[in-house]
Length: 138
Image (cartoon, rainbow, N blue to C red; front, side, top):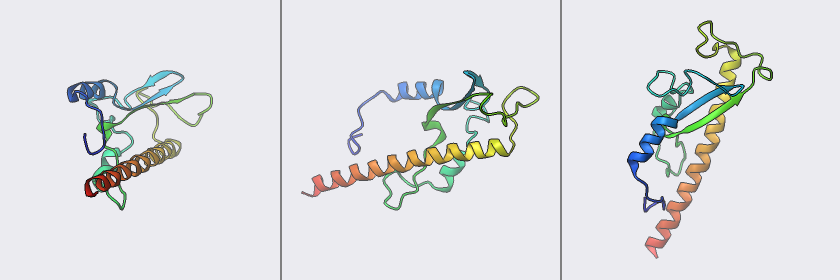
């Protein structure tokens, strides 16, 4: 907390909040598309963020980069519409979308956006760490 100047917060409240709101949820025409981002479900990590993290377990402050966010530490909502996204098809069970080429490209775009977030966050963390090191060494 001191190294990166995080403000203090009760960690149990953060865990409770992430359990309730965590994960990347998908909405179509303002209706939740389950099971994407559903906690305690195999589709919680439908973007494969955990796999990405396990392949690149770099710390946020690693100079060479490679930091990846863990799926348990991210929350977000993606809203799409049926009329503007006609290539998305419902599964016959009405639980989720068909995992066709359009859906795969959609996932890759979201992963790319998250990648930009990861790079930005890691850059800021490295800058803060360098600043702290200068203070300590002077």
